[in-house]
Length: 457
Image (tube, rainbow, N blue to C red):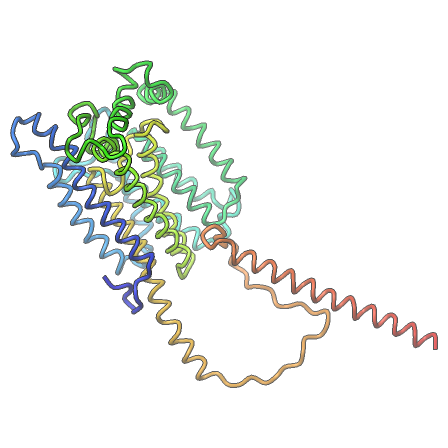
């Protein structure tokens, strides 16, 4: 795969991100088959339907790779132009699923049936990140105050509220944390973010206390041994699976907990199956791949050519990493169970398609950066050839100030850019100012002393 349409070799981060994604996809297909084949055999009593979830994973994985390739090559500008339409479609589907959605385990999260079943909340979390990158890039100063962020926060709140009505607390938390990460990248102040987090935490606590099944999950997280056969069942079975796997695991396909002990073993609890069959080594490998994914995605955000590319890559990378962390934390007993799948690994058609589309957009940012870097030396050479020698200008009079930096760059992305630009700009400006003022002061003192000496003479 080439790095960019306009030329330029793919960067190391581009290759790392693509390799980590493909490895997670291949590993996920193997683990979905291992986690689902046993239960299919026990349910049907035959081997004929044991690869049902594997076939669907391979099919949607292939479709997702096509989407990833298209978005990486041609998707940045069209997606940005279509962002309002995607957001409006997400709102429509989130409202439609509450009316005509398919109910599974008491939650109405899917529209359609069989092969054409989709989950609107997956598209909605992607749309929220796209809209945030678009808005914050167009209005860089918006992230500096709560008032400036309020239009975006209202959109995020509306999306999260509709997702909560399904109900789907896990996807709501993933969306909220990803938005927070993007606001940090955009330069939001810590005080404002803490205020927003406090309000969100209060609302989540109310949502947990007023919904019995969420309250049971919280109790199962805090004290899983209190109700082993009820609220703590899933958490206890996950711990048993991880503990029995040890360092190297029981062997691929030899796990026992997936046989009706772990509910939804091929989706939400696939990390427990990995821990039982491949042990600490398998879990460590998954964590390492996501670590490489995060490193490459954030490096791509750092080297993007414009603010939109920086925010888009940072937001989408955070979206996938936050989802992976919530899944792994829940399975290991470090967070309440929320029903969030492990990106690229768990079975889930909508999640897989959306995740691969997000990867395609991040790769598109890397392609754009590579193409820009390839064009830059040529344009610089042409400019140098046409440039005429400048005449020497008179030195700047003492006491005058340098010209100020251009306005309109309030959102300096201090986290993504490592703070270099902001620090350099401030130090340079302050240095120039102090130097000029000291020269001006010295000149004024000399003039006064000289005047006094001449007057005394």
